[in-house]
Image (cartoon, helix red, strand yellow):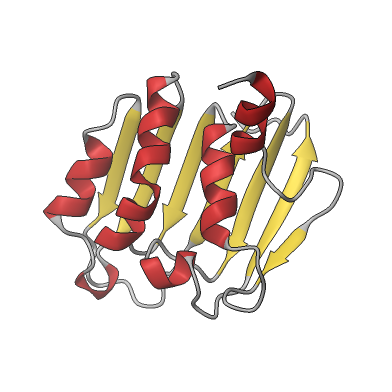
Length: 157
């Protein structure tokens, strides 16, 4: 693969010059396709979501594998909200090199539904904040609202 093809594969469609709103299922730009490119162009990913579904992990599994193979660091924090934490999906993530997965098993908490993904890239970083968790529907065509924010030189370490 030549350099131009490689850059097309890893460069997000949305640029650092403006923020973007992803609403799912209403346009040609999916959260899934943008996240894959963000994963492949980052050096660290912090993922904070209230739940992770197996199909959500499978959709992005190859990108995560390539990311850690290139030395990227993945940190995941999630909960057992809706009983959604299972061995299969967590073992896929936890088996990746340079990856830390933390799960809150506090079943007493009500209404705790964080959703934030931060991609650290040098010299800029991007963050996604919104309603999507890690499920097939949320990442593809579900009616979700997510805002992409960027900042050059974001000191997120």
